[in-house]
Image 1 (cartoon, helix red, strand yellow):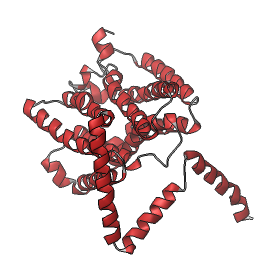
Image 2 (spheres, helix red, strand yellow):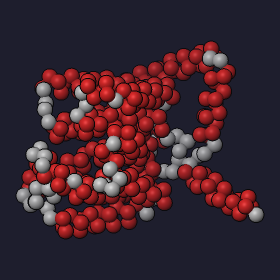
Image 3 (cartoon, rainbow, N blue to C red):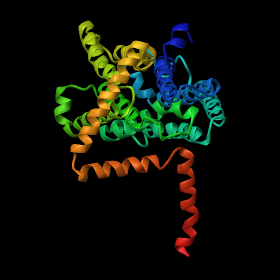
Image 4 (cartoon, rainbow, N blue to C red):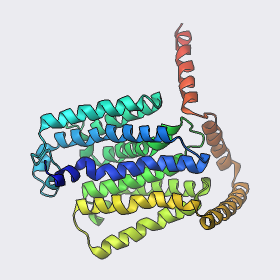
Length: 335
């Protein structure tokens, strides 16, 4: 295998994206708690990258015949191009799998479970027996779950805490990524939108809804505003340069848009930006209080119930304890 193919393949092309997705959780944890465990972060990163690299290998094996017919994909699909034999690919897959899953056990049972779930969901996506990626509806749901877990890996490599976990923010990013994936996979255009109003509309509404909640709930509104403006600017730039081809668009997103995700959060360390952010948080809180007082109890009460239910669980360990307690009581119910 030549140097170009060693660098330019499914795993290496997606490596920056996966690293950034993992680091997002580290940055969020640091913003909220003020510190992070470097050793855990490094172990988690290697475990995640190694485990998720398996996904690209078995995906390329499943799609080998289809990829052989696609000239653009042949540039980086080294199994389809014959640069890497299936036997060697399987050997690499097993080695990556053992490395990733072994390292994940040093962090927590929950992180190990997340790695297994990522593999399972991707098998559903890629396997010719399930054919999830051939279905727009299945792809939309499954890809959102996959990306939600991926964006969460950095956080849960460090902690099992869920009370401070920015679930709405992670959901916003996951839905946005799903939309970009569908654009890449199904070659989105106006005609496609008209023929798939339910899917396109649902993803758009959910993304906007979770974005607004994130803007109101979390303590980094400046970052949220940047993340709203940045994709628009990136889209305009891509139109300006008239980039064609799925690979160029994918690389543009990975090397330009995703780094902006981290930059938008890291910029809060700047004293001036931090001061602006704090003032914006205060303004939002005051408007939230006014809105809450003006809203009818029939709307406020359910929201308060949801909030109290979420806060009842401090960490994943509390959920595990609740599940164990529930299962221990099952014999009594049937006796």
